[in-house]
Image (tube, rainbow, N blue to C red; front, side, top):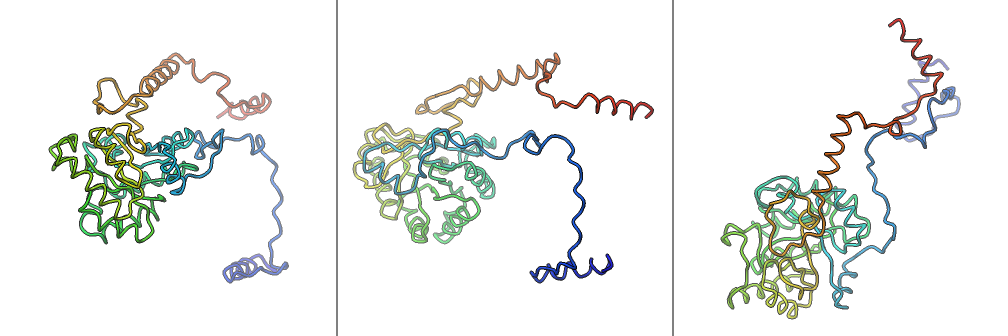
Length: 342
């Protein structure tokens, strides 16, 4: 059959999902000689999109796992992550729950406070974190301000987007008794919710700033009532932020769900910190809340590495011969001859 006729017939069979007859199949092209090293030896990019598996694999953390930890009085570890590398590290470290907190507004996007971050930005970061997380509870996404407060239906709609587009396993939202209907709406739809009481950063303007909550009898009672309300609404756990340790411990005893403390003492069922803060990924002099313990100096190590790189490039120490790709000498000579008269 003529080549033109073959070109007309071939797509029609494929469009109908049929296998074209052998007589219409084009003859296989002659295989071209291989050029360069085998495929297994090639690096087509200077970036690697895939994380490395952990040295010690562990079972996937589920809600059942978290309930078991709580039942056995085994503290639950929670850390924030805002991109693939930070989530990859948290997963390798054996963290139980990874939270994509709206704190990324400040630590990743350079915003003034958490109220500025947009829904689409949170979803983007959730997807990045989800790709890296293999074992931790993957993951809890923070519903940003303005995406759940208007009505329970709005909260459910946002939560569904987080699950479908952000690939999270659960969501977190701030607020106590007033948010119970929204929490109930979301959990009834089968989406796990982590509550957040005490200091609620999205409402810091109404609270007079980032201030400790529950320091008076009435204040402590309000935090307890909020915690009980979100538990009754179906939360699987609740973050208790910036509350006196004694008050948080009492709240923990009164609840049947785990409390995750941040600035709330060791009497909670678990702890959460912002990863950027605790690994020291910031310059000296940056403000840190009282409850943050600095476990590393990522900023110092990063500056040292970047400074050394800059100096070695300037002095032509980098790249060394070991960082380059070889070319056979005869090919190099042939190349030189080919371009001699250009």
